[in-house]
Length: 193
Image 1 (cartoon, rainbow, N blue to C red):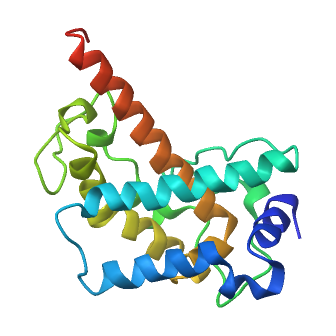
Image 2: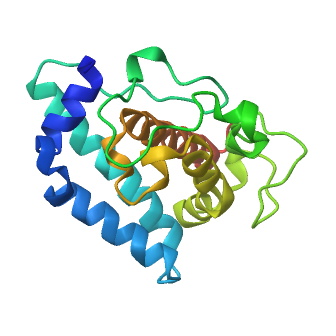
């Protein structure tokens, strides 16, 4: 087992990972989201769950003198150091999700520079146009997040996705986008860009 996977397993309690509090909370959130249990704060909750999980994992990693989770852009191949040999349910279907499904690529609307293709809910074409964390979270969750999980497949396509090391760096990418958006919002509020 490679170091990243060993760290994930240790964080989740080894072979008893299914009963780890973070796993239970994530699985409960996934089940609620899958059954339409969203409300008017679904986007903010999506971001809080994903960003909060990786921040807590970073604290665990710091205790082990490990670097924080590095964000992974699903427009690229999954790095080899994120091998997933300790399979809980099924092996990954691919280590290059964007080559299998273009919806896995980071959309231009989730970048500062933007593009011409609008986000699927609000029609924004660049990150600075999102007016709230709720709007940003809704747009990320709507199709992109699910496309990444389901295209990678295997354990990533389950409510126990946290057992796969790539899940954490994907969450890191979501957190990165949120941080960039927050920075853009600060710049906008000062009247500069």
